[in-house]
Image (tube, rainbow, N blue to C red; front, side):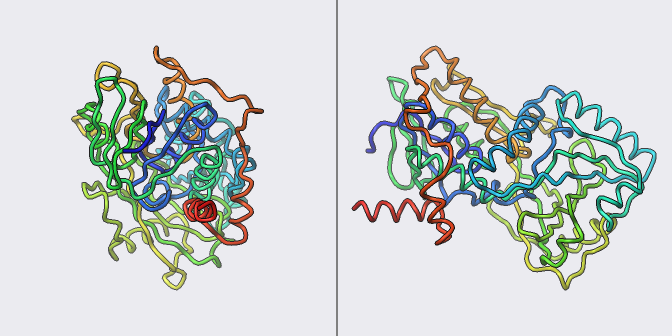
Length: 409
């Protein structure tokens, strides 16, 4: 049996690592239980790497509020934590009268959500921004951008660890038992852990963890998206992400530049129940290329270098309608448990605001006892030692921690 933690976070993806870093500002013993052998193995690393503007989400939703907040702070976070972020903008390209009306509504929704620097542009301006695109007009989101999702998640994780958070890898949670004193015993593949608070940041596993906590009834489906990666020689042809006009629930197959200089095509959106299969069938690659070529006719098989896929955990109601983020404490069922369900897109953009919003719920709890650490008490907001090693060795946080531990032993 391990010693008692104040908080155990289940899941070491971008949201779990943001939660770990934000909680490390407080006088707490914090651990992260990650079933994989490193961070960023699932949804956090298998996406488009787009920093969204916040205009695509329902008015008044947490997705809208937290996405706008995350977009605004991303530049400062990138400087603070030394990960790659480019505020390059994004265009949603249209051709028909119906497309124009949809874009006008999207701009109004964006304004209501607090998104800024959204404008309609004509064909001439569109082709000045993205010469190779096919379209008659577009909505230009100046504040959208692209991020390295691996670098971002790793930066959050290693800075959390630098501030005392303990990561436990290969620790898939198999059971959660509430004790008589309202603490929890968590059973994992590598033994049991005890904690005063549990935080469910399990991503694709959020429904299972919620059930283990006794908070039942959430229906989680997987939205599997496939991607094609193009060679860097195509990078100069795409200075910013190019999207079609969106539907109510799907942003469409788009073309995205990356912080490494490649171009990625996708995703499609297939509903799946298997959250472990990441294969990309040839027919899906053909469909991606054909669909995206209507928007950006620079896709050639000679430029394909790799494919990948990712799965988003979508919380849906009994009618299959996709729901907002759920961030809750249900004391009557699971005291001292912070439950995050359906954290899909824009979770990458909104990770730090999600963590801060959740922590505010904890601070309002009647038995809340944690105290903020003053800056002089030891919180380091920027990575120091790890970055020196990363630039020389390419180590992940897990590898770096193991190297540290071996030296100490």
